[in-house]
Image: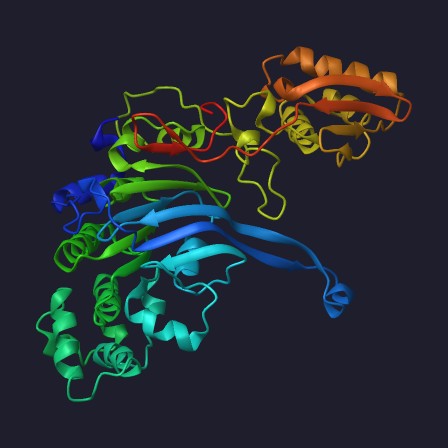
Length: 450
């Protein structure tokens, strides 16, 4: 894939001379083994869903949103790891959990070998000198009633720096991020700064304490195209000069490609592919990674290659699909990927958007509620609506005959009439594990490979 067709942002990045640097401390692309700065093991972050008002009074819940569901990730000192995926994939929740800003349901997060999740705010505060975050919206990150100098000085004050030492530290931080001379920018209020200057001020506040890790959550997405490359260049300079480690959260594949040592592709709370940036972009393994790259607009109008984009939308994290969470949208799914009753409903709804009105009315009335009754993990009972069970069997046979290549049928072992409906038997499924692919440095969670 040619770099100049990746993304409109890329031209800006190249114009700014942005290059990925090798970590000075042995992490990143150097390949030298080193003790992880951050080690994440089997991390889960689930948010409980409250049901009815009576249920809330009784303390009952109606399930949980699995925002992060079993993440394993190590970050070497000086390394930049990008978290990439659609909205709702759990990228920001993972970043916030590392900093103690999101409650951890299970697993552990360690900083230099010491577990930090579960610490009280009092015990966590000293660590915040070393673990900082740059938020997506620079306009909301700064207090509009405080000057830039006061905002940075307040962080220094909270962490114990004396009033005599603060002015020099404020000036050093501002000049380090390009807000020079510091005497000009320190007395300004956020409303007097441009978007890029505000983000520089936010970064100055984050680095003034001398952190080791920066979690950058979409740091350029709300900035003008003209300044995005400059902010990326600034972060790259900070990474090189200060030895910073980055968790870079983004949906912009171009910036991830040119800033990150490794890229982790996330889908519905799980990492589905992770590996060296160049390898992931040059030879994407997971069908979801391939779909993300295929979705990038090509500025060359003469290129009209067919794109195998995923169908449907990202599923509900409160009720994730069985097996591989991507299987309902995957063009390469097969029998043991996790097919279940609700997948039939999706197939029927998609079919009925394409057929004529008469066909829709004729077929839909033969089905009862599309919320099929699941009898076991691998079986489902579809009840008839108007008409007999035989009518429903014939209708299903016609639907299958019209589109025998529909991937849903790959997971159906049998379709049998029963006294009260039609029973579907599905191939038993399992969740794919994130496992390495030999000689690539890439790990993939996909049944196609393991």
